[in-house]
Length: 294
Image 1 (tube, rainbow, N blue to C red):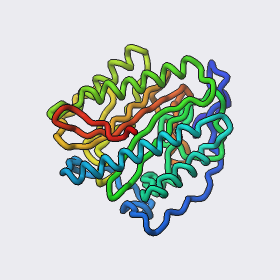
Image 2: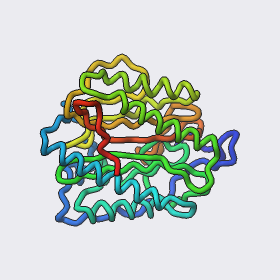
Image 3: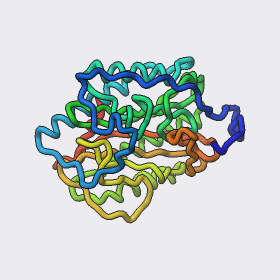
């Protein structure tokens, strides 16, 4: 870490610090595991879009539904005093109990079953011994691997009594995701997603993080296309029966990320708050179906 200040400038909030990470949780042998589960190496982004037949669509709906249910349950646990490791334990157990594998576990060596990103953490926060505090915000990012298909979703939750500044950031980030989904349909250019999100973020003077992207998802965790959340001139159009994620990350201040020594946790350069929401969507004849909702 290159930031050594204890408190965030112009705020009483303390800077996020790494806590203690508990040992990796076991997965029963009968659970189907993705190919990367024990490799410690990141498989990266696979070439080619995730386009599905009817059976594949049904499996995507099932994995998306389970991911949404797990995220909803995780959200009910969010309160001052709970640790992100306890949230990880609950998420891990619920996914296993439903016959699925927690996709983050072992992905590129990631040590936990869910990502928990608190306050200035943009993404990929590792659950640990830190207790959530009154006034925090926390993004919980759940992906499940069910019957050979991944469903991926995240939301940012309020911990206790949260300041208006943070509430507004979270609300606008969710609006960015919802508005981006609303413009999706077969033949639509992917760059319209970034334009839609960036325009709305600009209206509220928020930054849009550029280094982290949405992605194709389905039989593999991350595939083409890469979904940029900021204005861009990327080529490529949406295909019927294609699945991918949209997952905008907005900040109150700097959009520049700093990575911790754990090679996962990414925080804003200036300690300013960041929020994220994510859905897996399916391109249909009429537009887009959100797969990751209860």
